[in-house]
Length: 370
Ligand SMILES: *Cc1c(COP(=O)(O)O)cnc(C)c1O
Figure 1 (cartoon, helix red, strand yellow):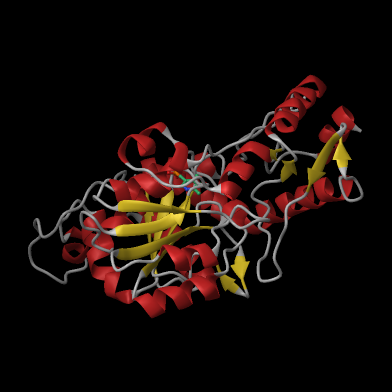
Figure 2: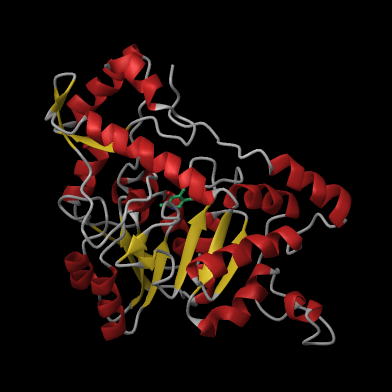
């Protein structure tokens, strides 16, 4: 059986962990490897400030604290996303306003965002689904007009671009994931990107449990203590050492994934059906690049999608679906109500993800299904 995902190792991970353990003499966070990872992103994508976190979930929670979400504030986001996008803001008392996806892509529809803005709106959270950019000019224009913060959930969007601008570098704040299922991984892991410089000082405090420890160690203050709310958001050096070994091979990893994506795309190029089921392939708008995070297909119905999962399973391929609409979830329905979101439902019912990981050789796929 070809699994849906398999972690990729570059070879240096345990070497750097060994170095962290035996040479650095520092296992807690914010040491040599944390700094190397943070600088990697600042140098490569010109992000003004980056902080490693233990997950993208944590980075989203930091964002909600930073934009100072208060009870009753409205936060607009897609319904077709992972629960963490919403939970982070719910935890701070926000009222989440779920907005529907575009007709041809799971990304949030800017026209529907515009309609959802009220006097209580504080922030818009966009999710670059499959690493494909949302239409950020439209989103940023709405945010500027209504004085809102924009947070990019760039969990899936490493090394992807919107009109030559790196994703994660456009909103006021952005969050990345290094979970095992993402392009670059440390098992569990994440990063907060601070693009709006007003947030930099406070982000370090929230990261360090609400203390000014980071500025104490830089010699900027002569004692450190409790100055704000915060939590334990920073990962240990062991995680950062693993992550750095992956980042050193980012280009190679991306080249392999893009090759696999192209091979899937070519296999299905002239096909309107796949094992008797009608399929549509992913749409990539011309303002967006493709970072080969995943390869998905759209079927005509829930029934077709579930049938195809079974057919592929019999052939030896593990394919999956995801994201039950958050607006229809048990938790959300208990506390809130809202209209049905047509496109969200469509992607939830009809989307199928094929096995996709860095070490997957397309020959393995061809051996099973061609
Ligand atoms: C993976 C993912 C997350 C969660 O990332 P973690 O690092 O596991 O917390 C959040 N949002 C989206 C869109 C994701 O794909």
